Amino acid sequence: MPGLVLVATPIGNLGDLSPRALDTLRSADAVLCEDTRVTGGMLARHGVSVTLIPLHDHNEAAQAPNLIARLKSGARLALVSDAGTPLVSDPGYRLVRAAIAEGVRVDAVPGPNAAVMALTLSGLPPHPFLFLGFLPAKEGARAAELQRIRAVERAGLAATLIFYEAPHRVPESLAAMALAFGEARPAAVARELTKLFEELRRDTLGTLAAHYSDHAARGEVVILVGPAPEEAAVEGALEDQLRAALAAGLS
Ligand code: SAM
Image (cartoon, rainbow, N blue to C red; front, side, top):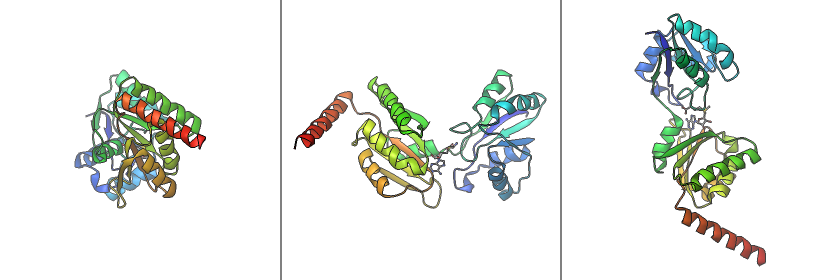
């Protein structure tokens, strides 16, 4: 059937490529992918040879009209990212929007996603959850974003928060989160999911921040922060912190 198919691929363990994903990739007229080496390597391991077209943040807007024209003339194109579910902190949104606007059929072959896997393993409430992707890399912008999230929490949202993070920024991000949400907030760090060195650390933000300031977080990481407690408890905790800070300053 012609149209665009969003195909989820493994986030580490190659055995997680579903039979339907493989069939879809094998039968597509072309596969749109972030990095042809990554997707080409994965397909070669499954003996699949198919035309690969690079589609990434830098060329998606320019490529979309050609791809829509191909789709409208009857092509079946599959879209993958380097890992996991396309569009989730990955390219594809602009193309999907354009396809929908042009009446092109869009389907998905669901599969691995680091955020959902981390959520289910975290021991934190699974719903509601708020997926926030990557925080800004710069300290000031990151602190401002965390304050915006706090404002949403103060307005009454008690959701588990899910962030993607680059390994070298894990210590500073956890420290900034501990400052914004309080050291006592339950949290989890999910590392190298589905891979040989998969690790789940479930603790408070303060303890996790201290741990990762001493131990490098190698590999790929999802950070999860438990829901805000009742506002009265937060205010109480802040008052305690203020009292402690004042006491420390006065002694
Ligand atoms: N589209 C992907 C998905 O569905 O999860 C996410 C792509 S995003 C560019 C890459 C980020 O996802 C990484 O920096 C990390 O935060 C997270 N991630 C991807 N694979 C992971 C894994 N195996 N373990 C932990 N986190 C992972």
